[in-house]
Amino acid sequence: MTQADRNILVVAHAHRDDTVDAAVRVIEALSSAGARPVLAADDLEELRAAAGSFPAVATLGADIPVEDLELAIVLGGDGTILRAAELVRGGPAPVLGINMGHVGFLAEIERDDMDDAVRRVIARDYRVEERLALSIQVKDAAGEVIYETWALNEATVEKASRERMLEVVIEIDGRPLSTFGCDGVVVSTPTGSTAYNFSAGGPVIWPTVEAIAVVPLSAHALFAKPLVVGPEASVAIEVLERTNGIGILWCDGRRSHELPPGARVVVHRSTLDVRLARLHPAAFTDRLVRKFRLPVEGWRGPSSTSGDIATVPIDTTRTAEGRA
Image 1 (cartoon, rainbow, N blue to C red):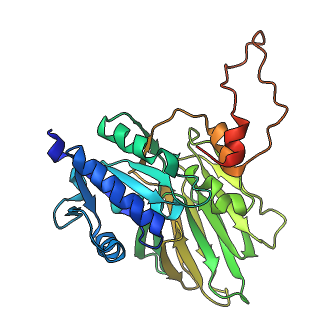
Image 2: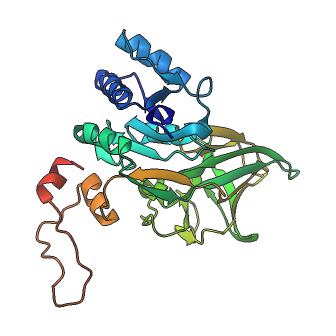
């Protein structure tokens, strides 16, 4: 493969000037290195309008199929990274996130390290992590599949009206577990465990642990605690026909589908994982400390004679600054 055959997708919103400038900079760096920058049609239109003059790029779909992408460089926060994962779905390209937002938990690096990231992409100096994704089906009361989608972070069944409550049955591996009224239910991957699942009181799951979390939202029940099931488990949420109102399915906060009474949402592991590009072999613990700015002052580290796993000291200065 020649450099010119290397198709690198750049994903960025044109809503902020710094992101527009960063997109132009990345595109020019890729072109200078002999690679072919690629943009989705919507992004290209918005960025051209925001930047005025804009470098020449190929268009995803019209010029370059998703199967021919080598990698996606994402400039933005977690929402933009989720959109990029959607754009490359079905192809081999991993996603590399450069945080231009706030927490940016899915992002690999911060904007200050953007030039080094592009250099390492050109040098193919990165590793790829496979992340568990979810496959979701919605069935009607007759059992017919009426909607199918997928999620990297979570699938959430929620009430559609503030004044109404959902009546649901939770099912695990074909067996009913509990019935209760609630505001909704979050079904999360380990990747999504630090997103909606975390805010709802669910457990943080290390990415190396293959599991699925099930977290009821404001449930009126004695037994409605967060659950962690195996990666091959099938989780179903039935909206009972006696529910006074409708529900709605949200996947990664991006795709939705209305759930009438009697609808059944079936969630299980997707056969297609999501690939994330990583530049640094940082421990997930360090990522938690850095992104959530957790206090670690006073930590002395494991004793060198205790047999504990060797640990690289955390740079608390950089942690406090929120830097990668």
